[in-house]
Figure (cartoon, rainbow, N blue to C red):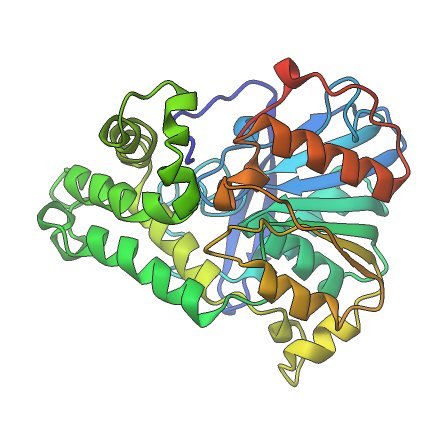
Length: 347
């Protein structure tokens, strides 16, 4: 579910002067990040997802978790409202590319934090897509890449899904064809419509059939929709949501190559990948991951068997989170011990 509040605890900022975007636009940007266990020699990067904030991102870094012995850097995507975004920079560009995210993160790590290599990049959803891009763009910089509920290329079905929430927002009366800021207003109706249109895709049909929302404290589905989706997205900035949705739709690691060949980009990845789709994910179905793993030199597929749909990968369900933790621990060769679910940072 989207995060509704900004929590600034532990967050630091790094300014990159004259950052050159993929579009050719040059502009100063600020990257928000949180550094956890900074004295550890092993480094892991976790980018945020769509609707995610730094302090609501599942970091696997608490005691007995699989990254407890790592220096974990959780970094906010450009456009999420914590790093430079349309909401906090009037001169922010009108479009973003995943390559902009990775280049900015690489600059943060190398120029500011002095990090020369990463043990792993781990990400959920749009964070997973960034994990794929990292493996393609800086192949010798990371040893492992772990995409959770994401793909190396956004499918046409995924693209079509996003058109629904986008249209609900941009066609709302209070969005006013994008002129709402000049009028000094906020497109509240549009943002709530965005959340209502989005919500059914996040979990599976089985999740709704089994009334899993009751396990979250809701008596009925309407209460769940209002609290977890309408209220949460209402707290977001409309242009931040739209610029990231467009970037998500355009995701394709083939763009990291001059010839644009998606499959060759996958085949050229040197890192070892643990690809973890959810069995019931409607955005990034496991069939897409199965196809991608076939083209990886060092790819392992581990499907999360769950009814929690896409949100299983973000920490929404304790059993799925425990399973992911153990899989990642085995993959990285770290001892996870007994997982303390009370200390999890859930997205």
